[in-house]
Image (cartoon, rainbow, N blue to C red):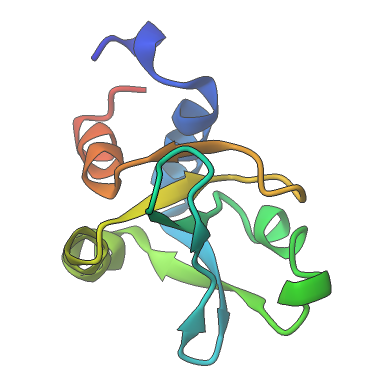
Length: 118
């Protein structure tokens, strides 16, 4: 995949999380926000964010009880990838308050991160 073929939203996410070393998701204890994918039929999506502030921006209404939670990038690779793949869950990248944004297969995201194709 060439640099120009990478969705700019995904490229910015990879740059930010590679620099910070962490990915943000929304949790309430052991419960994580997972929603229906907007792009893929009969598929769930786990919203991931490049910053705490981006994650916090959607913690309102039905998700008011959720809080941003940091996931070390190494933990994402070591633990989360296998689970997301087994559950056939996509990841939503830096969604806005209307839950709009890019979606990508978690292994495709991990490959881009590992290859640093940004």
